[in-house]
Amino acid sequence: MAAPIRRRSLWAEGALLLLIGLFCVFPFYWMVTTSLKTQVVALESPPVWWFTPTLANYWEVLFVDKVGPALINSIIVAVCTTALAVGLGTPAAYALARFEFPGKRDLWFWFITNRFVSPVVLAFPVFLIARQTGLRDTQIALILMYLTFTLPIVIWICTDQFRSIPRELDEAAMLEGASQWRIFRSICLPLAMPGVAVSSILSFIFSWNELLFAYILAPKAAKTAPAMAVTFMEGYDVPYGKIMATSTLIVVPVLIFALLASKHLVRGLTMGAVK
Amino acid sequence: MTFRVPRRTVAAFLGPAVAALALVGIAPLLYAVWKSLHYFNLTKLAQQRFVGLDNYAAVLTDPVFWQAMGRTALLFAIAVPIQIGLGLVIALVLHRPGLTFWKTLTRLSLVLPMATTYAVVGLLAQVMLNQKYGVINQMLGWIGIEAINFIGDPTNAFIAVVLWDIWQWTPFVALVLLAGLSTVPPEIEEAAKLETKSNWTVLRHVQLPFLVPSLVAVLILRTADTLKLFDMPFTMTRGGPGSATEFIAVLIERVGNRQFEIGMAAAQSIIMLAITIVLARLYIRFFYREVR
Image (cartoon, each protein chain N blue to C red):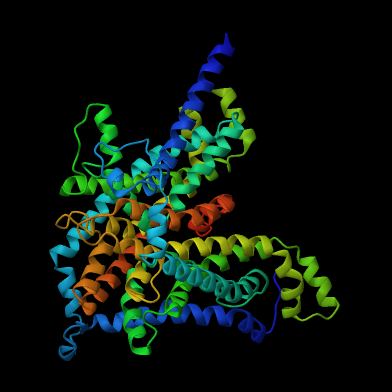
């Protein structure tokens, strides 16, 4: 008797899983299909599900509407800020994991608190400073400001990673007369590479997605792709296909990275509140 | 067991990161505090002057500011309980044994919404919720509901933001709670399941105590993120129609960036930051005392 009930509940469970999956994925399906529609097809009412796809929107946004350069800006900013965050953050993470010093807890707390500061608090003062120093509308301004969230992520995840490396390795190297820097550089850092990789992916995702700093600090030359997508909405004739083509170009790389780091994404978003 | 090392070594390892974060995180904050004590409008630079706490007095008595705060609180009060409820259901389903492959697949699809560029989420809402060309209204039509003007009507626009927030963050809450469920020692869970047939009893008395840290994390992070919420409503409605979806971060952006009142925007953002910190501390104190 138990078997049919078990089977029926299994079907119900499967249906529920399918529903959850569709709920998450459907908007992406609609984004991609709309990006393959011409404006005429996109403006059919009710919307059509079957049509002849075209890549014209991609061609147009990439080469006519300057989404291409914006994507390149996004890549430059995200890669540079991630590299900088790893360069600055891994030694700091090593120190937090290995050394004992006064004020350690406060320092730790301060690093994590950055997760709570809204970019809108920093955007205007930075805008004024950037205007005076000539950094406005440069990639440097964005690369530096993105450190406010990339650096804490790298520090948090890498500290955890360094703690998991057995101390005996450090002690053995110390007996051989290696300096702390040498131990960090040649022994611990190579072993911490998984953490470095995960935190790099997460900082890339968060930098790539950022809009507010980009919108306020980089209006033209250094404009990033999300800020570019927003400008399409200005004006009366809303080009649906082109907006969705731009959106697809922005979102696809992040989604690939997100799937690669899927186990750690929640960890990154919670800044370690959840393992 | 940590190493005692000379101060110089500690400084060499930590110095660069601390200096960088102070430069980009603290210096602008101090500058914002300084500017918030001034009348400072980008288009009227000649009139710049020190006004003490006048901006703060103006903000604290400004109904527009408190309406935006209220709207932000309302969004939180509606969306977060739904996210926790749905998230808990999803987490419990995924936590059950069996159908491993399909569950892995579902878990992967849950990762997608929260990683999606927030600005794109707002654009997607524009496209999918359009009254005439939107697929959501088409689907509502299938079940006999007439097309709704989501973006153009103040109440509906607010509802649309709530729905979209639920879409993007329910998966996040589900995954956090799922991680919480996996902290329940399996032998305790199995013993409980032998004792009672009721899933509710197991949830209430065995699993829930282990979920408290995850729930606190969800509350703190969702509070911080709702106060930060800018990209999605901005790309979807620009805070409109009227001010129906002008949440606190959108308001500050409008005052600073579109009205050029940077002194006023600085005062608003400092007050918002203070509220964020107070709320985070309250949660930690209130909920963690309950656990102990």
